[in-house]
Length: 321
Ligand SMILES: NC(=O)c1ccc[n+]([C@@H]2O[C@H](COP(=O)([O-])OP(=O)(O)OC[C@H]3O[C@@H](n4cnc5c(N)ncnc54)[C@H](O)[C@@H]3O)[C@@H](O)[C@H]2O)c1
Image 1 (spheres, rainbow, N blue to C red):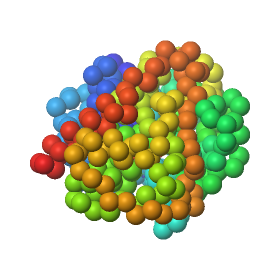
Image 2: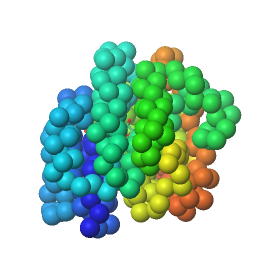
Image 3: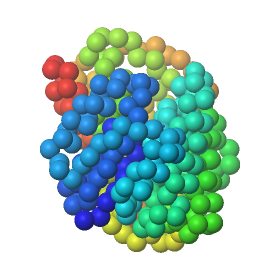
């Protein structure tokens, strides 16, 4: 049975991924520091959904703790590392810039440094669509779009981790794939993200901050589509030592459409507070997913309406509405 280390396993994508990996027959060790960027109770509740899998084990651990990671790598022989732990969010970098450098840059360096000589079959890691900055011509393609001009500290650290990864792939022959995720949403989602925040405010009758007249476009990608792609990439030999793929939906929608659809699904009317787009936020995102289609036959299968309906159902169940 292949063994996978998933970092950020109590996180939104990490918990979904850990479950799918167990169902696909992998043995999974998940680590997470359960930090308080958003309520750790949600992280613990996600972990409780994994309790029934004998092939899943959780260890509370910080990825910047090199000694603890070295111990773990001595005790266990991993075939794969899937690195999702990070300080996410664009706007929070104005409040706590250090957490981005520490968790994203130093954390990724620490993992790469520990696993550079452990004969991994593949090291996969989360990057982000934010590395494209305010690129104009959509869809954004790995091969043609410049990523030298990030416009948020979050994006800068993600771009920095891609550079670190390239160096480790080149110098140590470690096969690495960086995955640029595009606005992931779904059940157990992050409370700091639009889908969760808007749903929460709709049910509580609170006002929604409505940036840029609802015009910003986002390539909302359902979590199951992201996770299916990651599992397939884990089961497929990497094309070369260093690879980058977009994982997105290739169907951008406006924030206005997002709110309208959530209004319909919750049967609530939104109260909107119009505001300019904050610094760091980009105007649009849209993924070119053709290379991923060619490599693993990836097809995003979930429409925004279907995915939002799954989210709203989960939200109602979780909060007993
Ligand atoms: N959700 C999205 O839309 C999206 C988009 C692009 C990229 N990403 C990337 O995907 C990955 C997963 O995102 P998510 O939405 O699941 O976020 P999340 O915050 O729900 O999950 C990240 C997890 O990492 C943990 N963590 C953070 N720092 C850590 C550290 N130093 N040591 C151990 N654990 C630590 C957190 O406690 C959290 O549980 C992140 O790398 C994120 O940057 C997410």
